[in-house]
Image 1 (cartoon, rainbow, N blue to C red):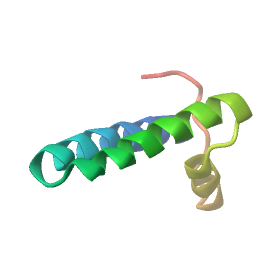
Image 2: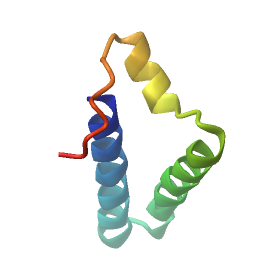
Image 3: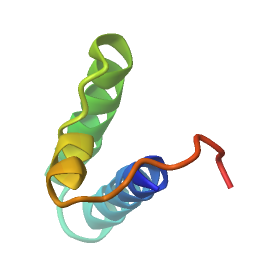
Image 4: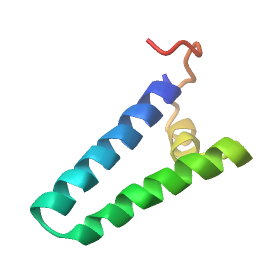
Length: 67
C-alpha cells in the first residue's frame, strides 16, 4: 500500500508543478526537480521521507505488486 501511495504522490506532484509552471510561474519546476532528486536519492540510499512518514502514521507496506 505504501508503495502505491508514494508513486501516486510523486506523480501528482510532478503533474501539479508542470501545470503550475505553465499557468503561473516557471519557478514551479523546482518542485519537479525536488521530486526527481528525492526519487533518485531514495533509489540509491533506500531512504524515502514520505515512506518514513507513512510508516509513522501506520500505513502498512503492500505486497510489492504494482497493480
